[in-house]
Length: 148
Image (cartoon, rainbow, N blue to C red; front, side, top):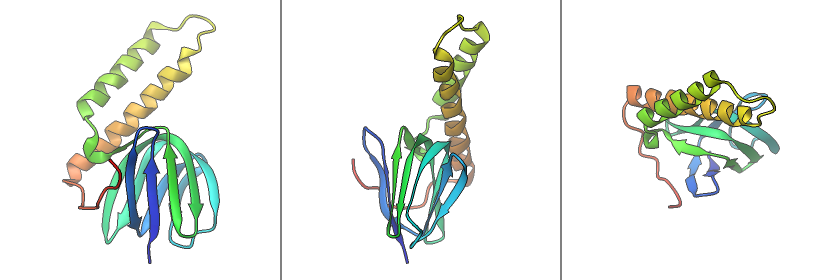
């Protein structure tokens, strides 16, 4: 028994396939979604989203968004999403370093850039975690990608 999973950003369809399970970083904790799950609508935080299919696991770095679950379909409307093998860890490390340097320099009083910089650090940390984990475990399983 499977459940359809679509991971979508404003730019593209990142993933679209029948899967056995989805593990998502909800704002109130990690959610495990199996076929015939009760309907659910929740927000996502920065974190790793896992897809399990046929004993294989595929990782995605998610930068927040919304998760909609129906008994036969999971839709992830992500603010940002990258498949593990798309992540350039050197670029993610450089982005984290730049954001941390901005914080060290201090922000002017009343600046609204703190949340922007904090989100850049969170996103970089998630990208690094997922990218490094993928490189340690080898190439991703052959799960077909939908969309572009």
